[in-house]
Length: 403
Image (cartoon, rainbow, N blue to C red):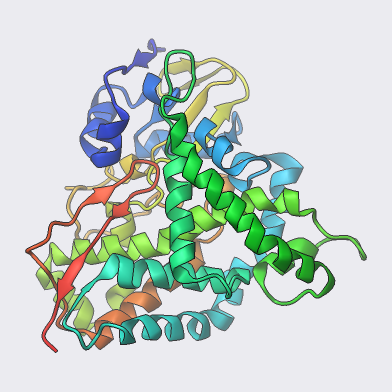
């Protein structure tokens, strides 16, 4: 039976950014596919509906309005057909498991050890700013070929791009309610261009093994390269999503483990459990929480709701990963839960290209941290706060240990 479309018009951007879980729990129970005016789109909140839409031939990828304003066109997350195929053929080869396995340890372990050396003898650290984010951005920055850009600058860029991408609030006319929310990201993109353009000038004539150099040259006819304007939107996607995801996944996994001291002790004693802890951490707090959209290519019925052609649906993967019909006690971090698939990396042909890379950065980062500081404890004098509905992770994580 087809049902009428539910309009949920009492949701605010503030509550989504601070704590989206109660909102999405309500949506899963009352209207798992509903129109949310403040986001200007339909919102899918259950695992079944998110997976169905992500893999349906009746939907194509589309970038959110704020995402388009942030990245421009053609960004890999918002295109289809030959352009999407070409962009994926550009970015995918360096991220295949057999390729990543070739260099990941040599790339990430020295980075992790370098940051650890700055604080492991001090007995305290704020791990998000001092370790998780720096390891994440440095690993990807070096892979891309941005060794000359400081980790602090890379972190600054992804934070500004994140604020822009998630500045999604719109009024009844579809206009952004906070146009000033794009200003800092616009300035960041100008700075990115000023630094990366000269690097591209060099890579065009002197290709090397950096990822961006490969993006320019791979798969092109002899003597031709991809235009820089064509690759910049996807580069911005990487400088946001791929920069923040491993770092925030590491941070969320640690926070989760701190809620279960017995499980933290298990992981420290048996490092082979770290990948399982990371998987649960990504399910528990998905770094890419609700940042992916699809558009219907025809009138289609989904979960009993008739969607007109051209309906934009926001896929709330973070909500899907807390679906009570799939997971017992989903709001709890639990290393021992059955290893069920989750949707932290999406689904379908637009699933995240960096699944394996992100997991390996997290694994190595946590291996190095817990080996160097096995008596790590959360500083209970400081609260752990999470932020974001499009991208989500802990804003800080204060820790202590005996030296």
